[in-house]
Length: 191
Image 1 (tube, rainbow, N blue to C red):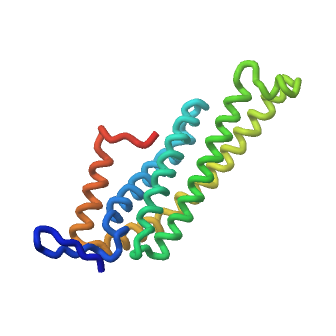
Image 2 (cartoon, rainbow, N blue to C red; image 1 turned 90 degrees about the vertical axis):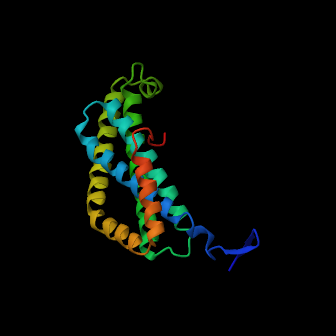
C-alpha cells in the first residue's frame, strides 16, 4: 500500500491508482456510448447525404470517446470480464461506424461535380454506379450496426448496474456528477 505524509498525518492512497478515476471514466464511457447509439438510431431518418455523413461522423467521435474512457476505466484492477467484453464491443461499434462514414464520404465524392474517379477512369457513368454501390454498402453496414446496438441493450444495462453496485456511495456520487456535467447544454460532444 502506498503511503503519503501530510502535515504530520499519514494518509493512505489506494493500492490501485487507476481506480481513483474509474467512476468518472465509466460515466463518460456510458454517456458517450448512449449518445452515439442515439445518433446511429436517428441516421436512417435523414435523407440528405450531407446530414447522414455529419451525423455518422459525430457518432464516430462519440464512440471513439466511449472507447477511450472504457480503456482508461479498464486499467483498474477492479475491471471485470464484462468490462473487457464491452470494450471489445465498442471496437465493433467504432469499426462499423467508421465504415459507414467512409462509404458516405466516397458516395459524396463520386456524386460531386467533375467526379475525380470518373475523370481518372474516363467514364462518366462510373460515378453513378459507384454512388449506388457506396449507398448500398453504407445501408447494409448500418443495418448490421443497428441490430448489434439493439441486441446490446440488455447486456449494457446489466454491465452498468453491476458497475454501479460495486461502487461506494462516494464513487456513485462522482459517477453521477460526471454524467450530469457532461449532459449540461454548454458541454458539447467531442469533435
